[in-house]
Length: 135
Image (cartoon, rainbow, N blue to C red; front, side):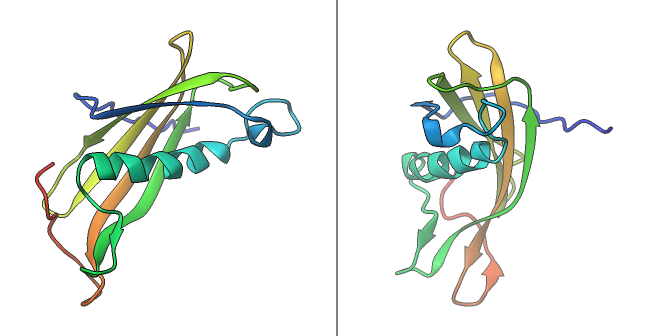
C-alpha cells in the first residue's frame, strides 16, 4: 500500500486545542476516522480569519474552495483526549495553497496530519483567481 506523505510547514501560523468528545467515538471505542475532517473543517475558518483571508465573502463574491484532502493517520484518539492542532501553509502559488493540520495528543505524539488543497475563487465569473492577500 502506498503511504501518503505530507510535508509539515516550516512555520506554524495558528494553534488551537480541542477535546475528543462522546460524539467523536465510534463502535471500536476510539475516534472515528471521519471526525478528523470534521475537526479540520471547524479549524479552517478561524485559521483563515487569523490570516485575514475569508473562506467565503459573498458581498465580494469570492472565497476559498477546498479541492482535495490527504490524511495520514498515525495514532488513535480516545474520549477525553486533549488535542493540539498546529496549522500552517505549504505549496503556496498565486491562486492556491495547501493548509496542513498537525493533530498532536497531550503526550506530543502525532495523531494525524491533514493536507487540504485550497484555491481562491471568484464566484461572479466562476473562475479561480489570485489570492487577495500575501500569505
